[in-house]
Image (tube, rainbow, N blue to C red; front, side, top):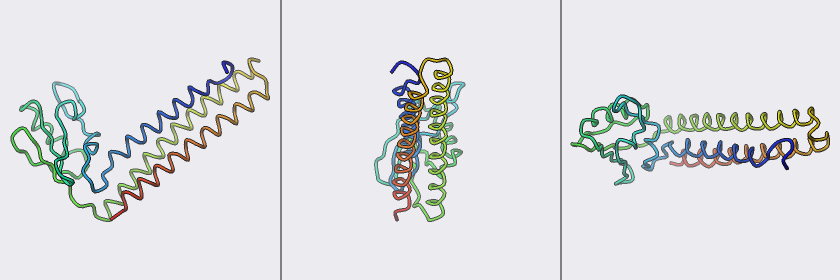
Length: 186
């Protein structure tokens, strides 16, 4: 299927949006400690901003505790500051080159705010998928206008692109529902 729109490329791009969404919701805390919680944290190090996992090792020694082992002793203060300022509600305790981060119990209000954030991530992913669909449809219209494919083939491919879009968005809705249930479990 070389004419019109490359459906495999569109599928690859939609899968990329789902992968980004999965990564985003994995960083949302659900009551169990996970090293992914610190994924959004960046540290001012060596003249530039870098992800925390490039200046320290993150481990989960207990279900409600994270440990961050900073590789360069001079970076401990910057790492602590970055974690405090990350709006994750975490307060690290400095212990030499290590930071211990106890995870507070999630209250109802915090759970609801995490669900809101998950919904924002889902909407961002859906917008990305709709952009992919728009690109595919534009390619089909151009191919039809240029005479590369006929009207029937264009319509058939448009329906395939729309079905692919609908399936991908339903996957995102399913993942969101699972994450919402996981967050709200007491």
